[in-house]
Image 1 (cartoon, helix red, strand yellow):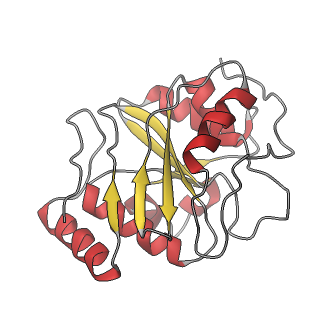
Image 2 (cartoon, rainbow, N blue to C red):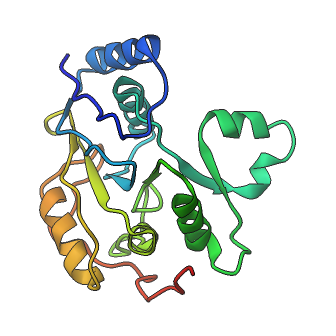
Length: 212
């Protein structure tokens, strides 16, 4: 199986064994990876559609196969007690929603402070979103305030392909940036549904307080 290599500037983890496990898992599942992540130290990557728990298995297999270190956001309280070592091993990024700038601000601050960091987010927020609810816009605010691009990834069950798209640099227009993402995800079929060609903006599309 041909897996696009990561550039030397990307945040990486793992080694030959984890790469082998990930690639074998994808082969056994009958999936492939197309496209490649850019050779950048920092970016936000989003994965959609998310309509099945099976998506997590595919995502983990791809992450292992690529050797990419992806940080996902989790409640800071998970880092207290016996779960703490597990959370750190899983590269969970602790965020305190009670902080002045909320989860978005906490994540932006972490990206700015790091030498290398890739943050992974499911923009639908849940695998069973309400009809017409639209995507959450937190990922856009994070990328915009941190000054990093968004890399879209599609789980296309029609072709059994994990497709990595081109970098989307955020602008002052959330609507225009979502239109670019819509063009990438148009026609992509998830496990239980197909993404709309036009991505509606969710209810939290209002501007959020920037991080100093």
